[in-house]
Length: 386
Image (tube, rainbow, N blue to C red; front, side):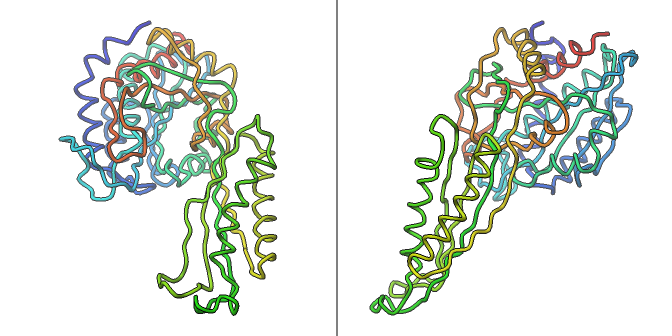
């Protein structure tokens, strides 16, 4: 079961779709052009049903096999949105939209799933139903949650769901996966420190918010180093330190800290939130200031189901010759919402020696397309044999 010949034939077309998406990136839920093209192509492929506007701007296509007596329904999901980044690839197909680019390869994911949909609609060599899912707003907008809240799983009776992400540093077209917790839960926090501003020459007449905030940055690092089991995974990062003044001689009244917490289990997630709030209150009180935490829950931990992961790995090994064990990833992925609704698996496909995702020099490697398309198609044909 190597890469399917049909995808070698379709490669020029799928590559052209991918590069068109790359030239015209759209952010979060504003994927109107992309979603429109996806829906148009699904209809042209002969999908039995095409529905737009699921999860605001998501698209769903339904393809029934030559038989449907098995009653099985499998969902395949790709994300469509880009990132607010200025592109620096210099590629002929570089973004035409200033400040937006496909720096995570969602253009490739969308194109590959379109290619798989075309093949599945042509052949229908399976017993059951395939639901192809094109999702907006993976990059921080929670589009997967919105699609689920719109009844994605119930409306089409999806029983299992599979997703894929390209991965720089892995050989092009190779695969890696792991069962259980895979991508981290991602939460954000904002701490507003309020003291007493004043002149820098008279610090004794102030409550210096910069000093309070500096102590907070240091103290928050003890959550991972002293409050948490060292054999588990936790990242607490303060990523922004803002004052309301840019003057050299002003102690500001307010300082705002922003940051992120990455965890792999619910207990750690709860502990980190509690400790951030306790440390903020305690450090603030120590210096006579107030430090209030605005906790912003993000994506849950993405957990691959055991059975579906083993199956996905078996299919990947037959497509590419091998399937490696993937490392834990402390980045977030809102496919987690779909895996909370249904069993399934998420796999990585190699993008070669390229810049990492979310980098302005990143670009999806089109040579990965046949392997990615083949994996999606074989998931269907092997799980629901005709």
